[in-house]
Length: 277
DNA sequence: CGCCAGGTAGGTA
DNA sequence: TACCTACATGGC
Image (tube, rainbow, N blue to C red; front, side, top):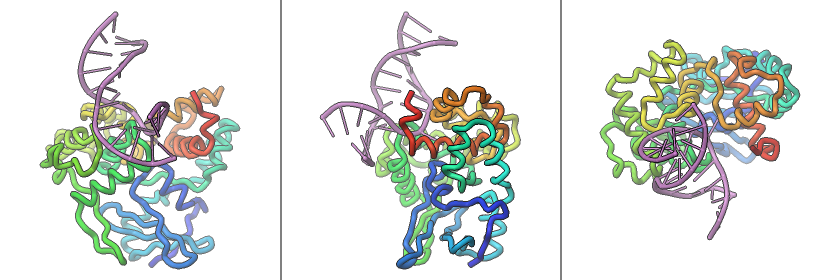
């Protein structure tokens, strides 16, 4: 177990792990008063919780530095990011103040792509359920603590499935989208790692050749899975938010577009009346 | 029950 | 280009 205090002092586990950017973290009760979050990424399970100002990661030091440090984006200074966004507009300042502990997770490209394919025209509780069933059905089991967790299934594993095979997911019309994505990625036709460095518009266009991937899903995959924070936030909440932010140009977000998106999305969920079209 | 969900595909004018 | 609607399922 390793203890860690983010250099920028910025981390709220609930805000970061349950703000609609990742769907596979779940709260667990370690003891009477100790609440933690448990999840799987890159084939590794983790339980993480907070004690005073310190965060406790239930993993080896090597695993923390080779995996979780990057996953939680500890190399980025979110205090500076939050200040820059707050200066743009009072509403953005309020949104940032509302969820100051959000960090943008550096998720697996393939998992993020699938997660946001599943997210389309869907609600967060059901998105979580579908992804959980997908992992239980096709992922590899990880015996961990007192439970069994599952890794996210590879594209190679998913590509051999039929829509009927995926019926237990109850993913509806999205099942065929997942299979198409799996075929395109596993065949090498779409090289996700190459899209990390390709020109952003080229990367987005490439992703949008996948059935069921439009501009929104593509941008979410770019942001959360490929860490392309320079992409324009197309999120529906952001579109509505821009009408509330006179004088703010989306370009003003710069590399902080992803953080702004999460601030506003989180804020909007709590204040929906402000964001009605 | 009805409305809606972090949209997109496929069709039409 | 700009709309329109079906889509599967279930949370609320």
